[in-house]
Image (cartoon, rainbow, N blue to C red; front, side, top):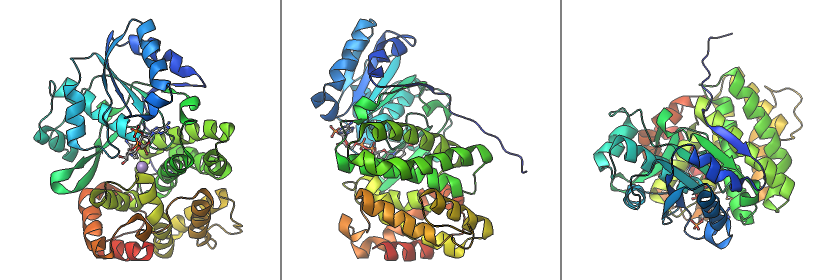
Length: 391
Ligand code: NDP
Ligand code: MN
């Protein structure tokens, strides 16, 4: 066996229906002045925000609130979030990945940059030119089941000046606590459950084939992929047991993307997101996922093929020989996508054919680590041809 290091998340996890009631007590351990970051309307309309505010009040935690997080947040969103805070001791994030990532970056800015960050500070941190080892503690309460952001060290923030959707992070960005209450996820409409569930599926299947994989990640990823096969479709239809299970899948995905990272699929989806901020992350992934699988199976070594065979098997494909049957993986992905109703092509997302070159170049420049973690070499021209097939 090759040597490996496994640094699991340091997030304390609290799972269970109704556990949003515990947010106050969990938060109070970090201070009595919180900054609460949440959705624009979803958590308000569902009554979940009121429950969380009440829980904070009962625990004697006062809070400022920021509720203007646009999907696929930009640096402006993060700045707005910090400016709405008043030197908090702890940041509570109640929402989807956009809220979590905004809150995490705001918490970093508050502790490391003393408040409103400059663009140089954030982008130098993102590029690795500026090293930071502190952030205000974050208590994450995910409302979607997809990004894994409640247990991972990443944030995704769009740099509008450079048309780049940048994923970055490090140890300080790992939330200290996460309260995972499946009743919150029950409020997701079917399309959101589908897209976010597909995002979790990608964290799992990409980590499993990543060049950075390890035996512990493998075990979590395979278990997660199997649960996606068992439950994603029912979750989309609103089945409550399946929604519960998808909160676990989301968390496993967060662990896997932490340790093994993501591959060309996420790189291309970020390229799409940079030019089309209106496209949901899960749809951008779905549009390119099967074509990345096909490319990797065709060009991969035996081990890569064997791994895709295992993924196909977990999704229920009739795999007799994992290596020889690896080509079944792409179709197993397509079947899942059709079953749950996520995007299957770039054209249906409004991407223009003329943008393909720029999307590929953007992915290659801004998502280098994901490109390098792809199990087969994939150069810019290859990215172009994958995008053309996904069009
Ligand atoms: P978003 O957080 O972008 O939310 C999308 C929409 O869903 C919003 O309109 C929001 O409401 C609504 N919403 C959220 N929760 C619920 C709910 N329970 N019921 C009803 N509506 C709800 O979606 P995602 O969770 O998919 O996050 C995507 C972002 O996360 C992207 O920027 C992506 O790049 C990033 N990401 C981060 C990762 C990480 O590791 N940090 C990994 C993968 C993706 P409203 O309009 O009211 O605000
Ligand atoms: Mn993702």
